[in-house]
Every structure is written in C-alpha cells, then in structure tokens.
Amino acid sequence: MRELVVLSGKGGTGKTSLAAAFASFAKDKILCDADVDAADLHLLTNPDIKQKNDFKGGGIAVINPDKCNGCGICRQLCRFDAVKENYEVDKTECEGCGVCVDFCPEKAIDFPIKKCGEWYISDTRFGKMVHARLGIAEENSGKLVALVRQEAKKLAENNSFDLIITDGPPGIGCPVIASISGASAILIVAEPTVSGLHDLERVADLASHFNISGMICINKYDLNIEKTLEIEEAGKKKNMSVVGKIPFDPIFTKAMICGKTICEYDNKSETANAVKAVWEKIISSPDMNSKGILDFNNIIK
Amino acid sequence: MIISIASGKGGTGKTTIATNLAFSLKTDTILLDCDVEEPNAHLFLNPKFEKTEVVYTPVPKIDAQKCTLCGKCAEICRFNSIAVLQGTVLTFPELCHSCGGCVAVCSEKAVFETKRELGTIETGYSEHIRFVHGRIRIGEAMAPPLIRRVKDYIDKTKINIIDAPPGTSCPVITAMKNTDFVLLVTEPTPFGLHDLILAIEAVKIFNIPCGLVINRSDMGDNRVKDYAKDSNIPILMEIPFERKIAEIYSKGELIASAMPEFKEKFLDLYRDISEIVQRSKKGCEN
Image 1 (cartoon, chains in turn brown, cyan):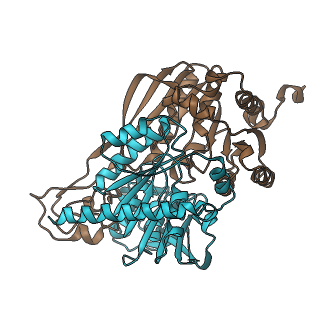
Image 2 (cartoon, rainbow over the protein chains, first blue to last red):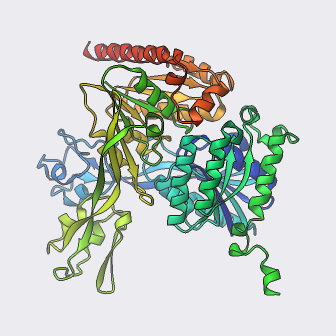
Image 3 (spheres, rainbow over the protein chains, first blue to last red):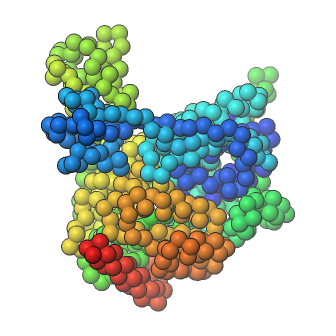
C-alpha cells in the first residue's frame, strides 16, 4: 500500500487544494482527509456520505452531587485542576485520566465515554473518500486521525487499490504524528516566506525523527525568489527533493469558490500544468515505488 | 487585558495581526506565541532572547526492587503508558499524560516520577514588547501543557497578546481560555468561512466576546461578511490583498513598519477591542 500524506507545518500553504488536484489525476485510489480538526477537503470534493459512524474518545469525569460528600480527595489528586470548588468538573480541563473516578471513596464519579466526533465513508467524483469531523474543543484528534487512516487503508485493500492520498493537518503535534506513521512518503507544501521556511524545517525534522521520507513542493514560489532558493537549500540539507514549484495564482481561490480543483477550473493554465508535473514526479518517485527502488524489476533482472 | 488571536484555518494571518498589533501599541505589551508547534512571531519581531527554559512533564518509572507486579498501575492508566508483561513492568513515557494515577495507586511506593521534555520556553524583549514563546520538542505530541506554561507569563496589568495555534481542538482551547477577547482572523474563501464557523463555536464555549479581521478581503466572495452580519460579529479590520503586503510578509518584515499608515489602523483595532471588552464587562456587572 502506498500512501502520500500532504503536510506543511504552517497552515494555509495549499495542502488541501493540492491534495484535491492530485485526487483528480490519480486513478484507483482512496482519498483521506486527516485534518479532522478543521477539515476542508470536502469543500472541493462534495462527498455523498454513504456511511456515518460515531467516534468515541476517552471518558470524562462527571460528579454525582447526590453521592458526593465533599471529602476533597478528587480535588487533591486531580493534576489538571479540573474539579472546581463546588465539585463540578470543568470539561475543558478534564484530561480523562479517571484517577478521581478510581479514588472516590463514595463512588460518586461517573466516567461516561463520550462521542467526540464522527467519521464518514463517502463517494466523490474522484472515488471513495474517508473523512471525519472532530467535535469542537475535543481531545483525541490523534486517535481520530489514526482511525480515519486505518479505515482508508481497509477500503483501499477491499477495492484492490494500492494508493491513498491523505490531506494532513498543520503543525507538528499529536494529529500530525498520527498522520505520518507508516506513510510511504510525505509531501511538504511550503511557501517562500520566513515562516514557511521555518515551519518546513520543523516538519522535515519531525519526518526524519520518525524515519519517513519526504518531498517538497514550493507553492507561490514567485512571491519571493530568494526564499524559494533558501527552501531548495534547506531541502538538500534535509535530504528531501523539491518536486516542483507552483506560481502564485489567484485561480486557487477562484476554483475553491466554485468547489472545484484548479485543474477542473482551468485545465490549460500554467499553474494547472505545474501542479500536474508535481503529481507526475511524486507518483514516479522512489519513495512512492517499491519501497524506495524506482525500477525494481530492472534491478532484479 | 488579554487578547487571543485565533482563526480555525491556518495561514489566514494570525501572526501578522498579533505582531503588528504589538508593534503598533506604544504601551507595555507582552506577546505570547502559543502556536508552540510552529511558532513564527519571533521571525517578525526579532526579539533579543534573554532566557531559555526547558519545560518537562512528569512520567513514571518503576523501582523493580519494590514492585510486586500487582498490575494496579497498568490498570489505572487510561493512556496505555504502563503494561505489566512477563514479570516486568514496561512504561511508555511518550503516551503518558502525567496524571499521577500510577503513583497514587501503588501501595508499595514502587512508582516514582522522572521527566519527559515537552519543549522550551524562550523569553526576551523586542523594544517595548516583552516576548515569550514556546517551542515544542520535535516528536512531542502534547501541546497543551506547554501552552499553559507559556501563559504563566501573562501579566494582567499589561496588554497581553496571544498568538494561538490553528484548529479548534485542545491546543486552541487552551490558548484562548481565560482571555478577555478573541480576535478571529479569516479570509473570505470557502475554507476560511468553514473554519471560521468552527472557531466561533469554540469561542462560544467560553462566552468570550469576539471580533473579526478579514485578511485578503477582496480575494474571495461575500459569504464571510454575510455570515458576520447574520451572526452579529463585528468586523474590526479588513486588509485588502496587495502583492506588496505579501512580499513584505515573506521577508519577515512588519507591515506597520514598512507601510506606516497601517500603524494607525492597528491602534484603531486595539481601541475597538478595548471598547467591546469594557462594554461586555459592564454588561456582566449589570
């Protein structure tokens, strides 16, 4: 199974627009939106939801006032200051560790497992897509990311596909770590700005920390040619090849407003061609083929 | 005064607004960059760092001499970070949430705590701005504990500006909690609107007054403005798209410095925020 995860570190560099465009080129694949926190891929793929499932995260402490005698043990033990003076639990602070539940001498604390979100299997004009929606202010985003990716993999296997295109979350924390483990390669979409460069280096370090190979695509490259060169240099140092440069082009926004990928919006534009060229490079890259060996058959001959 | 700057969608201009606002204010200001996964504010304010502090979180270790392999520690741990297997106790410190349950439950006092590095906090100054940011260690999954430690530097007698991470889950919630105002930065695109609606849901949890900055305001459609009007959220600032602004940003410069007419706009923005906060405080007293 080959899986490409599109990442960026910095948000708003064009992950989702590119992932959707790749989906329009690739055949026999599953599309996966692993940005469960602020998922946007569905705005370009217009999914028809075929299967809807609850996502249950961890438990959360709820104190039953009828049984509670105010002994204070839960307040002493809780390291997250989630139990208020009136013995109510602050839901935004409760970590779900359940220590108060186990130690309450009155057994006055319940630990209901709550629904934290939903995940879906949908049909789109690009094939099947697995996506999710994490509830507002919920924890466990990493768990939901892992679940969505696992379901995408199952779906690919059942359809005898060997490709998954995953739109990843921004940052380098819990959901990003969950979105790259076991991936064939990541594509880092970087923009030529001081923050774009800084954030690219952090994601690249994260990928090498987990031993995942990566490629870089520079979006809006003509906004600052000097920074584009610096990103190319940084790529060399991090052992990641730059698979393409895409010009700054308002058609990304125009296409988004129409709910289309940029190649559906204007297939002949220079930008659409640049995006296509990036995809060709990715899909024929060593990382996406036979565990890093580009022409495996030739070698064994 | 504590202002948090959030967005839902990434790359809409949170850091631009946070840094330019701090730069434009003449009074004592503290800028707290709580986007600990990808902190960027320092690239624009170039603070002189004076102190670097490594921040840790406690994780369990087992004293094999005292351990009776009773398994209670593994049982209480909801995060699978302790397992008792074949006569030994294994710990997985990366999964630990530092709840201390294992220490509390062990009757043999065989569980003690060591530490896992969360990241670093750097502090310094950039002219009148006290600068604080957290940088999560590469490979560390949990941002909220580090964000809380960055927020310990809040000084309520001063103006505090928090640059929050993108999204709507626990890191953003941790950053915006207990702030007086949430400034939401968005762009007038379908992605911007979709994620803004989610961000507003998050703000509602805390009942904090909020307002909007629309960045690249002429680059999309009218749906963000219509939404703001319908849901009674004030639009406090609009920044039209200009290639010049994008280029200034790309070099790590401040627009309020390179284009001084913006300084006034940021001062107006602060004045509007203060008025809303005053009004909402009065509203609460009445």
